[in-house]
Length: 244
Image 1: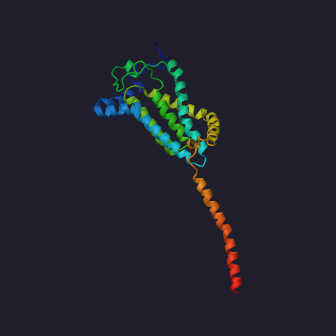
Image 2: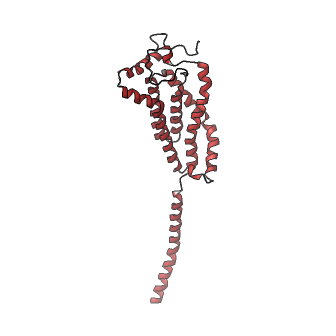
């Protein structure tokens, strides 16, 4: 059955298949333990790493002065990923591109069980880049770290032989478009939601317990001390008058 994306292997000079074979060919020369590690990383490891970065971003956002807004930005990351994955369903069905090893049995497949699934776009790449771009809007350092993992994810998906480079790029593009184009609408909903939660018993999910409270107590104590100082000076003045 013809697909919207032409078979990447019909021409020996095709860069899509050429790059895939170059990356996947590394697996043939690597020790078995390394191939197993990359396969686990491609399927689960990077997503777990991104989850850890997301958790860190949430903990940091709760301590910011604009905590409800920052937490709303972090919350947008998983929501955006879910939307991107839903958007990929009709795209994948329309393109109808089989996995590279289906048409090219010379590809070394390190992750079994993908024969009956479609290749374009890469779900793993879309999820990884969606989290990275959304977190970058809130915390540049953590977003950059997530972006590095997203790039590694694309490399690993080719290394294990389950995606063409254009599948990975398509996943990156889809996730980035969803995050950036829908962010204004999402934040218009999520920011008021987080502000509302901050006024309920769920406040700890949105804002850390205010160190500002101790700051206010210190400020009040300082004000009381300043108010008391004139009284102490008046007492000393009366004592001086009596001594005279």
